Length: 177
Image 1 (cartoon, one colour):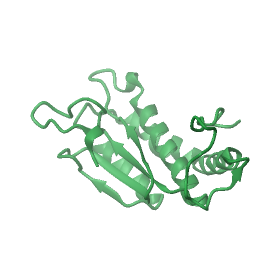
Image 2 (cartoon, rainbow, N blue to C red):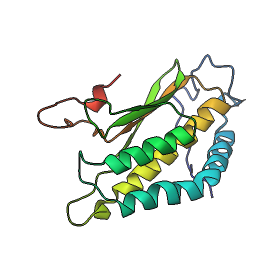
Image 3 (cartoon, one colour):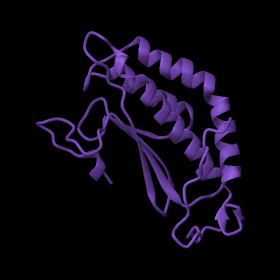
Image 4 (cartoon, one colour):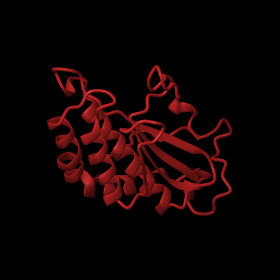
Protein backbone atom coordinates (compact mmCIF):
# COMPACT_ATOMS: atom_id res chain seq x y z
CA UNK A 1 0.00 0.00 0.00
CA UNK A 2 1.30 3.43 -0.89
CA UNK A 3 2.16 5.84 1.88
CA UNK A 4 1.27 8.73 -0.43
CA UNK A 5 -2.33 8.39 -1.59
CA UNK A 6 -2.90 11.80 -3.13
CA UNK A 7 -0.16 13.81 -4.84
CA UNK A 8 0.41 17.39 -3.85
CA UNK A 9 -1.67 19.61 -6.13
CA UNK A 10 0.09 21.39 -8.96
CA UNK A 11 -0.04 25.16 -9.21
CA UNK A 12 -3.13 26.96 -10.51
CA UNK A 13 -2.00 26.56 -14.12
CA UNK A 14 -1.73 22.81 -13.62
CA UNK A 15 2.03 22.84 -14.08
CA UNK A 16 4.93 22.34 -11.74
CA UNK A 17 7.33 25.25 -12.04
CA UNK A 18 10.93 24.15 -11.87
CA UNK A 19 14.12 24.65 -13.81
CA UNK A 20 15.24 21.21 -12.63
CA UNK A 21 16.06 18.83 -15.48
CA UNK A 22 16.34 15.86 -13.10
CA UNK A 23 12.89 14.51 -12.21
CA UNK A 24 10.86 12.72 -14.85
CA UNK A 25 7.82 14.67 -15.95
CA UNK A 26 4.54 13.15 -17.06
CA UNK A 27 2.35 15.46 -19.16
CA UNK A 28 3.94 18.52 -17.57
CA UNK A 29 3.58 17.18 -14.03
CA UNK A 30 6.00 15.60 -11.59
CA UNK A 31 6.21 11.80 -11.75
CA UNK A 32 4.51 11.05 -8.44
CA UNK A 33 4.41 7.32 -9.10
CA UNK A 34 8.21 7.20 -9.26
CA UNK A 35 8.42 9.26 -6.05
CA UNK A 36 5.98 6.86 -4.34
CA UNK A 37 8.05 3.87 -5.39
CA UNK A 38 11.26 5.42 -4.07
CA UNK A 39 9.69 6.43 -0.75
CA UNK A 40 7.95 3.09 -0.23
CA UNK A 41 11.05 1.06 -1.07
CA UNK A 42 13.25 3.15 1.21
CA UNK A 43 10.81 3.00 4.13
CA UNK A 44 10.29 -0.74 3.60
CA UNK A 45 14.06 -1.10 4.02
CA UNK A 46 14.00 1.01 7.20
CA UNK A 47 10.77 -0.37 8.69
CA UNK A 48 12.34 -2.73 11.22
CA UNK A 49 14.99 -0.26 12.39
CA UNK A 50 12.47 2.58 12.68
CA UNK A 51 10.25 0.34 14.79
CA UNK A 52 12.95 -1.23 16.98
CA UNK A 53 15.72 1.36 17.12
CA UNK A 54 13.55 4.47 17.27
CA UNK A 55 9.91 3.93 18.25
CA UNK A 56 10.37 1.16 20.83
CA UNK A 57 13.43 2.82 22.34
CA UNK A 58 11.70 6.18 22.79
CA UNK A 59 8.58 4.54 24.21
CA UNK A 60 10.61 2.50 26.72
CA UNK A 61 12.57 5.56 27.87
CA UNK A 62 10.10 8.45 28.33
CA UNK A 63 11.58 11.85 29.19
CA UNK A 64 9.73 15.07 29.94
CA UNK A 65 10.21 18.28 27.97
CA UNK A 66 13.74 19.68 27.81
CA UNK A 67 15.07 16.53 29.51
CA UNK A 68 14.92 14.24 26.46
CA UNK A 69 18.61 13.33 26.49
CA UNK A 70 18.11 9.65 25.63
CA UNK A 71 15.71 10.56 22.83
CA UNK A 72 18.10 13.21 21.49
CA UNK A 73 20.99 10.75 21.43
CA UNK A 74 18.86 7.95 19.95
CA UNK A 75 17.46 10.09 17.13
CA UNK A 76 20.73 11.81 16.25
CA UNK A 77 22.60 8.49 16.22
CA UNK A 78 19.93 6.99 13.95
CA UNK A 79 20.18 9.90 11.50
CA UNK A 80 23.97 9.64 11.55
CA UNK A 81 23.70 5.89 10.81
CA UNK A 82 21.64 6.88 7.77
CA UNK A 83 24.51 9.09 6.58
CA UNK A 84 23.35 12.52 7.74
CA UNK A 85 25.50 15.16 9.35
CA UNK A 86 23.53 16.17 12.44
CA UNK A 87 23.88 19.43 14.34
CA UNK A 88 23.32 18.61 18.00
CA UNK A 89 22.23 20.85 20.87
CA UNK A 90 20.82 23.51 18.54
CA UNK A 91 18.88 26.67 19.34
CA UNK A 92 20.28 26.87 22.84
CA UNK A 93 18.75 23.54 23.88
CA UNK A 94 20.73 20.49 24.93
CA UNK A 95 17.96 18.26 23.57
CA UNK A 96 17.43 19.87 20.17
CA UNK A 97 18.97 18.89 16.84
CA UNK A 98 18.73 19.48 13.14
CA UNK A 99 19.82 17.79 9.94
CA UNK A 100 19.48 19.05 6.40
CA UNK A 101 19.92 17.81 2.86
CA UNK A 102 19.70 19.46 -0.54
CA UNK A 103 20.41 22.88 -1.96
CA UNK A 104 18.67 25.65 -3.84
CA UNK A 105 14.94 25.79 -4.35
CA UNK A 106 12.46 25.88 -1.51
CA UNK A 107 12.91 24.50 1.97
CA UNK A 108 10.58 22.06 3.70
CA UNK A 109 10.95 21.56 7.45
CA UNK A 110 9.82 18.49 9.37
CA UNK A 111 9.50 18.81 13.15
CA UNK A 112 10.00 15.86 15.47
CA UNK A 113 8.64 16.01 19.02
CA UNK A 114 9.76 13.35 21.47
CA UNK A 115 8.98 14.57 24.96
CA UNK A 116 6.75 12.53 27.27
CA UNK A 117 4.28 13.41 29.99
CA UNK A 118 5.14 13.19 33.69
CA UNK A 119 3.98 9.92 35.29
CA UNK A 120 2.25 8.54 32.17
CA UNK A 121 5.10 8.56 29.67
CA UNK A 122 4.28 8.53 25.97
CA UNK A 123 0.50 8.51 26.38
CA UNK A 124 0.71 11.61 24.17
CA UNK A 125 2.25 9.52 21.38
CA UNK A 126 5.32 11.67 20.82
CA UNK A 127 7.37 8.51 20.31
CA UNK A 128 5.13 7.86 17.30
CA UNK A 129 5.35 11.48 16.15
CA UNK A 130 9.15 11.38 16.32
CA UNK A 131 9.27 8.07 14.44
CA UNK A 132 6.91 9.24 11.71
CA UNK A 133 8.80 12.54 11.41
CA UNK A 134 12.09 10.68 10.98
CA UNK A 135 10.45 8.37 8.42
CA UNK A 136 8.98 11.30 6.48
CA UNK A 137 12.33 13.07 6.46
CA UNK A 138 14.22 9.96 5.30
CA UNK A 139 11.69 9.05 2.62
CA UNK A 140 11.58 12.58 1.26
CA UNK A 141 15.37 12.90 1.43
CA UNK A 142 15.84 9.69 -0.60
CA UNK A 143 13.41 11.02 -3.23
CA UNK A 144 15.08 14.44 -3.31
CA UNK A 145 18.43 12.77 -4.03
CA UNK A 146 17.26 10.04 -6.42
CA UNK A 147 15.14 12.37 -8.56
CA UNK A 148 17.62 15.27 -8.32
CA UNK A 149 14.94 17.65 -7.10
CA UNK A 150 16.20 21.13 -6.22
CA UNK A 151 15.36 22.22 -2.71
CA UNK A 152 16.27 21.73 0.91
CA UNK A 153 14.77 19.40 3.45
CA UNK A 154 15.42 19.90 7.16
CA UNK A 155 14.38 18.05 10.28
CA UNK A 156 14.21 19.89 13.58
CA UNK A 157 14.18 17.90 16.78
CA UNK A 158 12.12 19.09 19.76
CA UNK A 159 11.28 22.55 18.41
CA UNK A 160 7.66 23.56 18.52
CA UNK A 161 6.47 25.59 15.56
CA UNK A 162 4.85 28.88 16.50
CA UNK A 163 5.60 28.83 20.21
CA UNK A 164 8.65 29.80 22.23
CA UNK A 165 10.96 27.00 23.19
CA UNK A 166 11.10 28.16 26.77
CA UNK A 167 10.13 31.35 28.57
CA UNK A 168 13.69 32.49 29.29
CA UNK A 169 14.96 31.57 25.85
CA UNK A 170 12.29 32.71 23.36
CA UNK A 171 13.60 31.31 20.10
CA UNK A 172 10.91 30.44 17.60
CA UNK A 173 11.99 27.44 15.54
CA UNK A 174 9.68 28.53 12.74
CA UNK A 175 11.99 31.50 12.30
CA UNK A 176 15.09 29.33 12.12
CA UNK A 177 17.01 29.66 8.89
